[in-house]
Length: 244
Image (cartoon, rainbow, N blue to C red):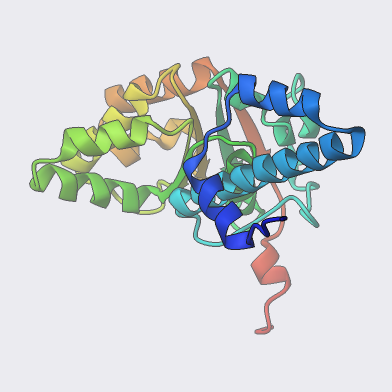
């Protein structure tokens, strides 16, 4: 008498199992070519499902304000360094070596879009990433310090392989905020990649930190393993504005 196994029974058993190499090899050797093909398809689907779930978790944890990709992105505003270009950038080779990127230039030329697209691409490749506007990060750290959990928050930030600091220098930072921001950047030196978007030249970073020495120390750490991408051109928002 043949016993009919239900779908629910298979699902329940699957939830309890963690297949070992011995079991997989044993059942694969017993199976016919068709059965092996079915088993391979099952395992491939499971791997893809787990990877998709991980990508979704990483994207959610990155706290991106919107989801951006490279599709349709206008690269014409970017001036790359002589030894660097578009392909290694989208391949995320900078992440493998914990290198930094400074996206510097005119307002509305695609700096934030590119930073977010790079963070999203990193998540899709299994990297941990986190996005902040610079002002929001300072507020986040200040609240953590006030609540006596600054060390915990710094540890959580350190788990990321990429940190995006958007709108660097757009809003003033007080002395305490500058010290907290310096601590994050210093802690990540040679440990993780940093993407900074800004419209301020390095010579003006002292106005952000209120201290030229602290600014010099930050710049020194960023440029040591970093690349400067310069953005020039008319603002996309102005060019496509309804108000003329």
